[in-house]
Length: 304
Ligand SMILES: C[S@@+](CC[C@H](N)C(=O)[O-])C[C@H]1O[C@@H](n2cnc3c(N)ncnc32)[C@H](O)[C@@H]1O
Image 1 (cartoon, rainbow, N blue to C red):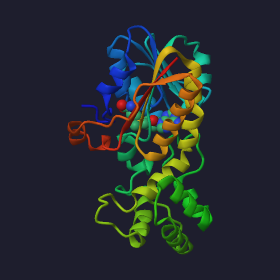
Image 2 (image 1 turned 90 degrees about the vertical axis):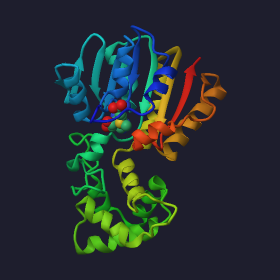
Image 3 (image 1 turned 45 degrees about the vertical axis):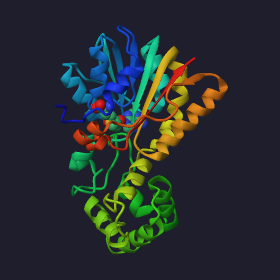
Image 4 (image 1 turned 180 degrees about the horizontal axis):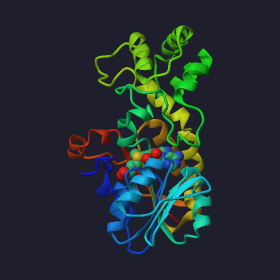
């Protein structure tokens, strides 16, 4: 089993991508390469993009590819697999640089990998004591979660937690953060989690950790996730061949809304056909074996 990350809705993704041999596909969220592996097994070719150098190195190692540092970003290239360290918001530029044509599918599997969550030094998880970091590309991004927590005004913090975490207790949490940081800089995941837990009630219906929504909000802000997705989606229509498929797996309503609205607008313009009227969710069996898949929603469109 892949310990880096278990791919979510793999069977459904491959079915909807309608993978054909010898064509190019883009995996915009390479991660541990689980979906990429599935596409390559169907004798197709993949451009795998990820912001995170650890993802590029992991998949390169598994495919015995040499990683090179080009213009300060990692790349590994073979006949049927190209690994490229980049934000998927630059997809159009990357495809042009590599001179790839006839791309028959693009996949987004948004969010963070299990590897990122489980490696304490990355600072994504409230369960592991670590510096509050959360940068997907620590080399090129300069602002960490700790920087935001310690620098934003109280009302900016409230807005950030409300908007990106959809947290109803945002105001209370922001107030407590500002109070606590006057005593001491908030520098670790545990410290922040304790602060949130001390003021956020745990409802009976909600079995998630009280810090879940605030941590999600910080991660989205640090990595500018929603903006990147909004930038990337129109580029997919530029790089995709007619008849090519776009598959997006999202993990929270903010991402899913962006995808849903993009599909609706482009469908109206006549540039795509929506294949999934309602998003697909993982089977009960998948959720049992891989609980991290539980909030996944998969939407598919075809370029006309
Ligand atoms: C859920 S994981 C992908 C897992 C992968 N599909 C697999 O099966 O192993 C999401 C990955 O997307 C990357 N990522 C997130 N936002 C990105 C962005 N804007 N551009 C490029 N990569 C991004 C993360 O670094 C992470 O490795």
